[in-house]
Image (cartoon, rainbow, N blue to C red; front, side, top):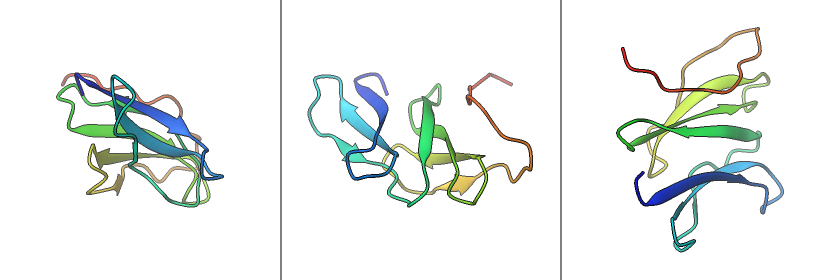
Length: 89
């Protein structure tokens, strides 16, 4: 992630996760689901992004590779998730 920025935009009418170069070039959507995606956080090694989404009808924690591949839901909880943060084991 060193020279890239992860951010949320609703430019397509829905909140999705985007990545761009630090100079603002090469903006690309990492998520495109109809649900609202928000609070993205880079993994320490810069290969994965954790984020929250209500795409499943409730707010859960998801991870996706920085190129948009291998999307995975990590929680399926009745409790609302908030502000993901990476921590070492």
